[in-house]
Length: 285
Image (cartoon, rainbow, N blue to C red; front, side, top):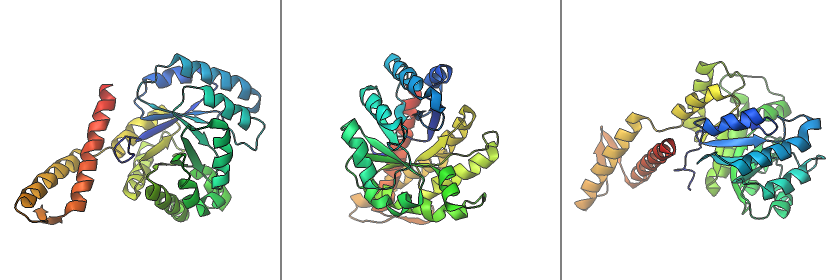
């Protein structure tokens, strides 16, 4: 489904090695899950995590949630085995960390075949090559790894994320040009609901489809921030009606709430309604 319509409001990281967490994820109201074999799993647990995750996905029960498996990098001792295992898992997407170029995506695709690929965008070189990475035929989504990116850029933390704006913008441009899903990086202070809401609002305003999350307590905030509000839905409906009325009279411009409404506004309005309907369908499922 077009990322402009299919919800990716909340994308929760779950350790692939934790059976209890894997089970709990089946009941969480998230749009997508990143089953993590990389950062969330200790080196001596990598092999066990692979098998634990495979068993959980075989058991199923994750409903309409998009199932994304983040593997270890192919330059690590575990990456190739992860990729080979994911190829046989009931996963929707494989997520590759620290993607620097389209060649990295080629290397993964040579193992995972036609399985859709998402890229962790978290390095300076990846930012500079975002357009070529996004254009890869198997690339379906970007995940911003803002913690790693901040480390590589040697930035200081700022609530407005100004030091990261160039990188975020490059990734957004590349993703939107190719029609990819793009989800924002994590907010580390998982008990700070107010701060999370501010950062979610910033990400939504910039054009991100959703937020990656590190704790279930963050889900409701992200779901609310990245869903169309009642006011947006109401305005979208009125824009469509007004435009269709003037179009029937042979005109091309309507006015709603004192503002011009052209065809491009109606396209956006219909996308808003489609996303709202898709969210309702997910919640009903």
